[in-house]
Image (cartoon, rainbow, N blue to C red; front, side):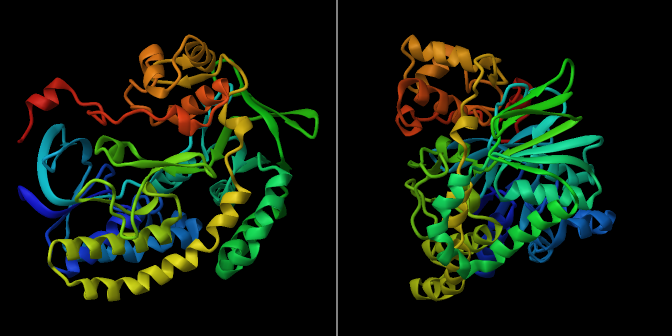
Length: 463
């Protein structure tokens, strides 16, 4: 590893891999860091191992997953420096980055930084969500990719969004016993999405794919309950039953596993720490870094590519990685402006095509406000510090009107996850309690360490 690189890329998902491949073409030094043991990110998790050691799982995961094979292979064959198992915990203003690897803290410097950390599954703190047996649908999909593991016993999926249906489809193909799909999407959402359908038809393959997934679920004889409300999990030591209301009637399923999904949101912890300007995206109710057409943030020398900027899917993430790398090569003097602009045309065309469906999907699958705010005060919101929804409401009533004050009053966001699992929910609760928008109550500030680090690891630093 060198002391300084032209381009340091954080994240080896589709955006990071594409950016590294593009940058390497222009002879600039590149280093890629990723927390996982293999390149691929969450969308292409363990793709090399899965293809070679679990071919049946590789086939089951289908073309969306298999698309990453060539990307990962091209990256590997390009000879780009890649450090797996590297967890970033601090970035300094002088363009020095610290990360943990093999139990040691290491330091590397850069001329330009590309944040390609992707997205997170939005946590949904329903009553009982901390019971063993309750997990995210995307998390279950990651387990399938990384180890071929699927839930045993009776399973229910609940929530909304394309990834809910994709996860259900893959579990059906894996012969998992699914009792039902509980869809929180309201009928009104279909109506509000309708005006965006003509534009979405320009990327009709997404609509056809969605119809195929739903048809597969129904052909498997799995009932679908749309417009569900009051979702909750119950059990003594583990999940035993899922309760919900449907069309005014209370229903229950006795299950071993509940998989919840209410969409994904950008992972903004690193861009927060860097001091990048962020903007509230009301339609999907999340914060994202403010970027220009090349992925440049408000901080000089820092760019963002992929779903860490704004959630738009793997193929747009891949194209945005190419664009950010072309911009880096231009800024570093490796290529001319004309070269950059000409090379970018292909990727901008790809982005325009795939973006055509995004307004339709975002109108059809907005986060359901009834689920974003826990209906029961005893529901745990911050798992690290064991803070309930009721405690957050009480803190607001005592004068904690924004997230910085709420952190001081309740310790929400001070645990090992640094707010990844609770920030958006805390904001929704605080906003509703005050009759405000989450935009007005703000977000947690980024602070080091981003990931837990021991004094021993610091003392064992290789700096």
